[in-house]
Every structure is written in C-alpha cells, then in structure tokens.
Image (cartoon, rainbow, N blue to C red; front, side, top):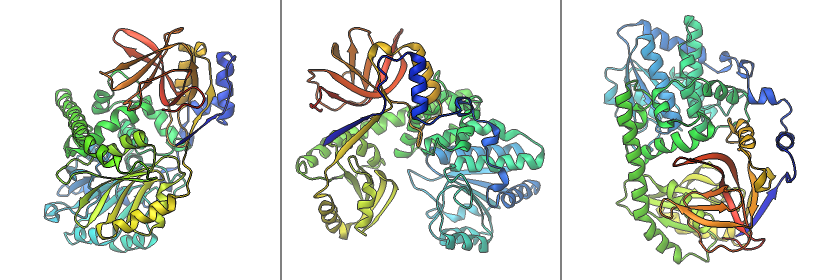
Length: 536
C-alpha cells in the first residue's frame, strides 16, 4: 500500500513559543484562553433538549410516590455504563427504590429482555440505546410501565411519533438539538441537571466526571464547544471512585479515558462480564472497587488470550488472500468472546487493506469491518445492498446473510478492483529531536488535554540517523532510542519487521513517559518509515 505523509508545518529551528504559536495558527485557534478553558456559556440551555421537562416530571412524580420502583436499563459500552451510573446514583440520591439491569456481551437495546422481570417495576429509565421499531417498547408497555429514554442515536421521525403516541418520553440530542454529538451519558447528566434545577439542588455536579468519561469513550466530537466545556469541568472534578481507581496516578484527560478506562470496559463487554463494567462506576466501597478492577484486568487478560489463540488460524486464512484487495476472516464457532473488532484492528495493522472479521450467528455472518487506504469502506459495503453496516466510515459492525455472502464478496472485490489504496498520515509539525523538551511537552499536553474526534491530538514528525533498536515486554512493543538525546520512539503492539537500516522517521504524539525509576521524552508512534522509500 502506498504511504502518503502530509506534514503541515516545518518547525525545525523554531523556539518553543514559536512552535506553539505556529500550531495554534494551523489549528485555527484564535482565542487560546477560551479554547483551553471553556466556560459555562458554552453549555446549551437545558430546556433545549426535547422533552426534558416531561422526563423530569415522570421521574420526580415516581420518586414522590413511595410505592414506585425504578429500573435503570444500561447499555453495554462505556457510554452506556456511565450513563446508567449517573441515572442510578441520581435516583438513589432522591431516595427512590432502584434496580439495575445490563445485557450480556455487546447486546444493545431491550429486544431480548425478559419482560417478566418488570412485574414489580413502575418506571423504566433506558439510557444510551434506541430500537429501530416500536414493537420492543410495546412489550414493556404491556407490563404497565412508564418509559423514559435518554439517548443520542439517530431516530426516524415515524418511530419518534409512535413513541409519543404511546406515552414514551424520549430525551435525545439527535432530536432538534444544536449539539447532535452529545453522548448518551451527557444527555442523562443534563436531565439530572434539570431535576436539580427544579429541586434547588446541585447533586449532578458531582456526576460530571461520569458524563465526560462516556463522552470521550464514545468518540464524540471534541470540536463542539459544549462537549469541550463538559470535559473541562469534569477533568477538574474527578470524584467517582471507580474512575479514580482505573485511572490510577495518571491525569484525568481525554487520552487516558480513551486508552485506559474505555479498554477495560470494552474487555468486560467482550468476555461477558458486563456486571463488572456496570458496578465499577456504582460502588463507593474502596475494597469492593479494588476487587472489581482486578476483575476488569482479568477480563483484558482473558480477552487477549482468546485473541492470541485465534490469530494463528486467521493468519492461515490470510495466506490464501494476499493478492486480494479485501480480506475475509472467520472466527471459529466455539469462540464465545466478542473480539471481532479487536482482531480486526490487529489484522488491519498487519495486512494494510480493507477486511472483515466474521462469525456465524444463525443465518448471518456478522462481526466487524476495518479499512485503511480508502475514504469510506462503509460506502462500498452499503452499495452492495446486502446485509447491514453500522458505525464509522472505516470501523463498523457488519452483518451479511449467509445465503448472500458469496454475492457480497464478489461485489466488494469488483468495486475495489481499480482502487489504488493510499494510506495517508498527517503530522501537525516536523521537529528536530533536540527541540523536544519537558517544556514543549507540557505545552502540547495543554492543547491535547481535551482531544479526540474532530480535534485530534497534536502530532509531530521526528527523524533520527543515530539510533538503537530495542523492544519492551519481551518483544511485544518496538522501542527506538535516539543515541544523541536518549529520547525514545515507541510503537505499541508491533507486528512488523525488525530489520532496520537508514534514517528512521516517525509520526506520533509527544509525552513524558515513566519506566522503572526513570523519566523519558517519548514519541508514541502512529506511523513510521525508514529512509525515503522503504516501508515496513
């Protein structure tokens, strides 16, 4: 695959202040203070969320009725678990009688729920999920429960009207709200804020760290002023004991949510321990939280062991497809863990082309698609008119009827036949290795504190001619050491060649790293190459 690097600025020879000023100009940041420190004015008014007043009234009336019982219905990802914890904690604060429920594995929504469990429930608060038809909700309504939903997914007008006609109260950032990128956790939190306003209370202020965790983990836009304001306030007010325990001694910022907290929740989802993912944000007992986090760590170990056991079989499948522009991988039927997305990421790094990782479920092959080198592989999948594909342009869930799989495969390969894949990696600025200092990294960390979708962390391109090649974790990670400065370049979970010669060039993010008792200046590698043409 052809690599194309887009280096936006040449910062070699610039002083630290000049580097920062150049980056601010390149990112179109005119008011640094308001960018780094968003204010309450960036928050949209609570009443702009459709039905927020009706939802608050249903909940508060239920709390006032001492005989009413609530069920908080969690979704299974990080956004769903934090949203559910916000709802549960708030109801408990109001003195309500609350039960919780979370599906197994990555099963989203209420369609498979046993409604006999609703016999003693009066109000169901569903967070961070929406069905594609009214029928699953009718099953709930037949049990004479009231339904409140706080969500952010797109919904068809027909379904929304059907909900209104049935008395379901939907509060959604996808319905007539200026910030459609607000996550389920934040919609839930804003409903709690509204109830605080009605009760002259401020309890929801202590739940904002949960809201921001769900927001970042769900890859919501970090260009949205409201989202940035929520993150800014949350990062200064970490209170949830579970988040504190998972985050450890690291700063509570976007990066450590994305690479520290969310992966542990995802691992629990994959190996069917959603109870841990739910309870880690609910418990206030330090000993209990410590045990839950140990369980989450074991989930990651179990997840990784499953992946390691499957990879040899998948690599054998790859050998027959090396000349294809799209590869298809099948997970064995006896694998229970939901690891198709994780495996897809690993295979994508190894084979650098669009691919699907599938498993048989009934009459369907379903799993994950991953792609590189094209603008939107999802569009290619959608154009076949076969099955479904839901998610991002190059990372999504996918399902294909088994009876139509060969037709789908043929259509995709025909579509890609004349496509020239180009893997484009951008860097904000090129620097010399000697320009990297503690002060520069502190400046970049300030800019990267609130980052993610639509405002990616500042990336830097650096090269070195005088270096040693090493590794960490018994060869799992690549480590390049610049002999002149001691700065290190790290590529996590490296699967490529270890034969290096020539100038080493890398694009990544700069940070201060701690290994053992020593501190290092580090570039965490996003992409690299050796010399001008050689690519690994």
